[in-house]
Image (cartoon, rainbow, N blue to C red; front, side, top):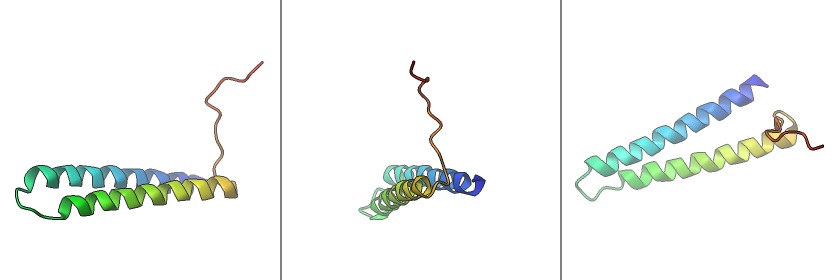
Amino acid sequence: MLIVKIIIVVLLGLIVLSLAAGMFSMITDRENTNRTVKMLTIRIALSIVTFIFIFISFYMGWIQPHGALPPAG
């Protein structure tokens, strides 16, 4: 299902953006703010949601592993 793959790619993109925002706020904030912690918390939450979504998608049969290893034999 193409929509499942699109959702996974969007979630991974949001994780990368959150990580970049956390890095940017860590570098630019000279004061003692919680913005970096919030960005990294969002990244962790998105990672957990992505993992759960991939697990559910695999369990429901929406996605299948492609078998990166060569066939045995």
